[in-house]
Image 1 (cartoon, helix red, strand yellow):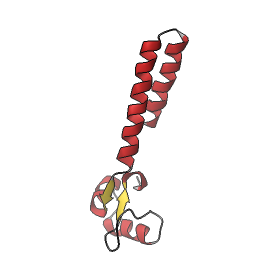
Image 2 (cartoon, one colour):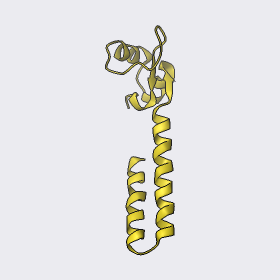
Image 3 (spheres, one colour):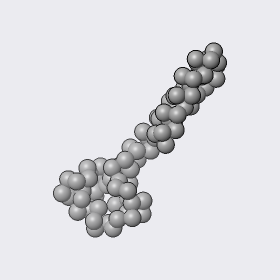
Length: 89
């Protein structure tokens, strides 16, 4: 998805170079909106069960990685969670 943000920014530059300012502004706006949405999605806090489904790793494996600090804990004491952006894929 990051590559799509960069593509839309590059498209905006190309459009501006050809005098299509209004169309370039639309591309820029979409790039910013997608970038924000991706950041918000990355900040989503997942339970270990949700992270397990997403990553394919077992809950126990994820729990060990959180406990040893390999994956940052986004939860609270005795209730570890993982931010989507930190979930191993």
